[in-house]
Length: 109
Length: 114
Image (cartoon, rainbow over all chains, first blue to last red; front, side):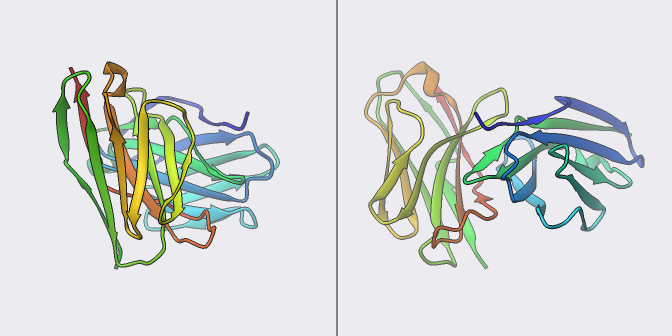
């Protein structure tokens, strides 16, 4: 069946470094992708999205890259801060929205 | 702007008791509404979604049910809770008319069944 997976369940980075969180999807018909951030005890918060007609999209300190050839997307966070510590989910739409399992990002001061 | 509310924020219930969780959305009309459960493993499991009043689609057969009595109100219920119903319940919405774009989540309800 269709699934969305993340390469690493946890990621630890030093404050100020850049973070890269990866995600793979299986449905080649997926046309829309979203990254969410979920802090402990809270609902997921929309970060950034990208449509399949784009390869890259930038927001404030975040960049999403999409490689449709290998069905992979990544979230890059520049100058990671302690407030970035959270679980990050990717989601892909190929009919319905499918969520990945999440990567927990820990930022070391 | 649109906001989504869920209550209660936390709930502790005994096995076999009933459940009613409520979700309301403000600032939009005819939204699609969703109920998810998030277990300790962090993944989001879609339970129900609704594209309109009285229209409920179930994704996972279980002892839970959902209802949409009003356009912007979505209710998750159970007649008898099981231990396995414990988890973090999230309500989400997105634009209606069949759109499957960005879903926006509520703050969640932490349910513990003892």
